Image 1 (cartoon, each protein chain N blue to C red):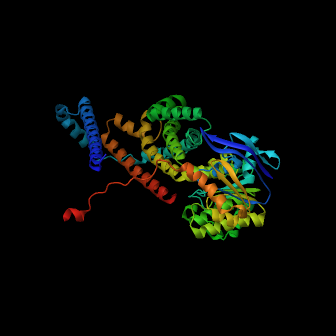
Image 2: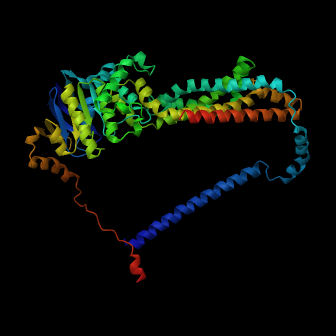
Length: 267
Length: 269
């Protein structure tokens, strides 16, 4: 084949792959537009009619009513405690599961497969549903909230941990094994030191998420500030609703900055 | 002391090691030479049982190590330390903890769960580093060290295993000439000073001649030479390397010239 013909072939290949890319992007855009239409987003009339209701709600929310702030302190503290406890529990359960669910540390492909499936199942059950179930099981309060948060998180955290473990450099593992390390020692001395930064990152991210999620869990009676939020909503005290939302926002900002600080100093 | 009898290893249809029978005495320093893919690495890994032989046996002081399992296998690996071409350190971990990894075979299984090293082990690791002039690096992350320093850390890790045998798999292939000398001197010292038997894979013939008391030449998985460095005449060396060179060479090979774009100068003119 002469060079020019070879180049033509390469250029034709390149054009074909560009066309494929363009076709794919058009398909995605079409899917987005269709979904917006199917869910009623292009129904201008509904938006037009909702105008007065929205402005009514907004005017009731402003100014926020902070007069009951003292009764919110305890639920906010509960929410914070729930987020920390939920994270701790999630980490303790996730780590051993992740080791069994990573192909390079799993004792058997069947174990690996079963655990991956279990983790997928756990994260596919929303924590709100878990919250409802645990409230039914152990009664109202922070405890069902913590159980719901951690169980749902095990599915997510376990998956991230397992993926971090899966991608470790295998060479130090080989060295540990060659020195006579048991499986446990290989994990302890060769795997964990390599993945610790990623595990920390995932854990801190999850804690930040837990704080936001536990604020919602109160709605189903699983303790924390969400309970107050639900009560204010039920009583149509929208000025209190906005005050509680602002309080949650303030706490989220604090939690996120503590998270950022931890991330930096644990590196 | 170490006897390999009719050792074979196949990977699929490829026979990496063919019918190797050898005897290696206590305190020897043996260089295994040959080109890449000659089966040197597979041979060494079989001795430490990182790879299991397809057939044959490996006897150490009369015990067939190919039959060992569980705690006995781990103890054998502890006694036959290994050094790797890529050092195989945990980059994020400091140097001292990398050396301490060599102590895994000595701590009780209960204690090992804590991940904490006994004080005596720490002292031993530090003194090992000191012997190779890198004690001052003990607190540094391994990944910040040069290749030569990292390989010395790996040698210290092997040394604190208190092994009877040291298996070095291309220990200097990733190093520059200066670090090559430092690392080879370190291996020689381990052999002379501690009386540890050293088996070292090398593809550099001159280096093997300089440091080893005995050379074993491998080609296409088989031992084709076994003797003193002096016995390895240029003819034998050519046989050893040439045999494989012929096999690797593609009879229809050769690189065809690629057409190039016309130079800009020609276009302008």
